[in-house]
Length: 150
Image 1 (tube, rainbow, N blue to C red):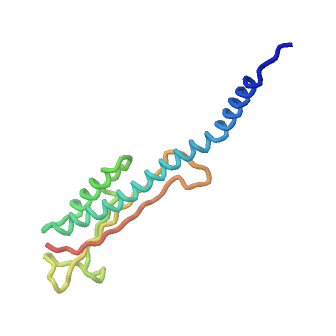
Image 2: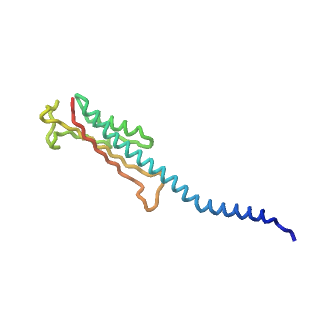
Image 3: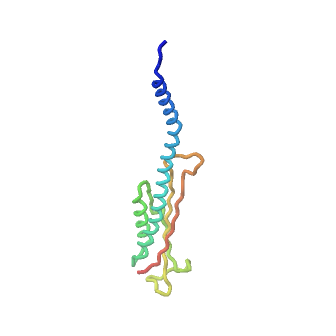
């Protein structure tokens, strides 16, 4: 009868146990990594939409002859600086009105009746992984209001 040393059996058992533990925890680690990456992309997209609305409103507010196309191009350029964001001018709306939100602006606006521009940027975010039981698309929508001061 051949005797196997006790240390050799112990090491073999430890390796098998480690393989089982790795097989159990590896899916959780992969899901955590992919989920974290999707969450980081979603946060970056939210910040890009917010910055796009701000850039569009600022471009419109400081120009002496503002146009909707100017604000849209500034907003789209700012949003597209973020990787994976592919915004177009259809993602940006521009409105201008006096403080009541209804009355049309006079150009240039007098100090007694200031004029405000509102730029709204929207973008639909899609996750890289189709997650079960979780929404796989998010609609980001941010508005910025600037007083026109030209």
